[in-house]
Length: 373
Image (cartoon, rainbow, N blue to C red):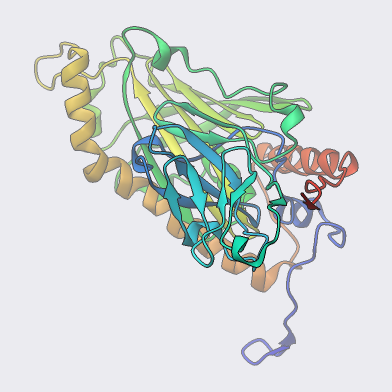
């Protein structure tokens, strides 16, 4: 197709196999499904509710039985191939909206409406997925079930103790590739984008290293320099002049002065759509003008108030930039890449390597056989 504005042939970005540059490879990489992924808020899936979850174009029906137990099954009725999320939860089973075929948590077909034809019950099992709940989020393991015990949901001790830190979780669904999100949240050279809120300024990369599992880096920077946020940080107690950041595949985290921390959990929905969960947690905040640390309950009140006023609009700025970057890449994927931050190629290399490793070890996951009883 010819682009009339640029008088050039417009072709889509290359696939992973066709890509020639590291950036092209990164922008075409999926994420290894043999990991745990945050997919939804636990509180948003009530008993009797059903929701569709998509991981890299794989559709999964996530539901909670009337007994409160979660389950996740392949989102396709084998009869006429309707999504089971069009159906309903019946006690602790899932019924297809079309003919009422019912599947239990193990994916077995247990009931259907064709017994009037004198046919025996079909022995049919849908693929199922391990489910867990942690930090108020529902986690799924979309890959090989046998590997689900080999990988763990990240441990966040500050949120698992009897006296957990105050914090909050926000999420966004952005029309952008997941590798662009990682580049963005690890690259502190984009302070201009956040000039209104100034979460960080004058960042200087001081250290970086990587291996086949993670990329670790540090910046010297002025953290929490916004017009409002600066009054809530006790700089005598918390070192806000530097930050640690790590892309611990497939997750990302940061640490400021051992008092302000976050994790970022990505859900790659498809090649150009990513849902991002940000989990922030704080040891405490400072009471403005007084200079004393607020108790946990007051810290939580302050954080709850700051989410719509500060954190969500701040992160929304990243979303605008990332969606624009996705559009720019699709139009100019063959342009020579310009990258000044030495960490970004390392992030992309890790993403590519993990996807390549997965593809090389891929064995088709066969659906259980369908047999007449």
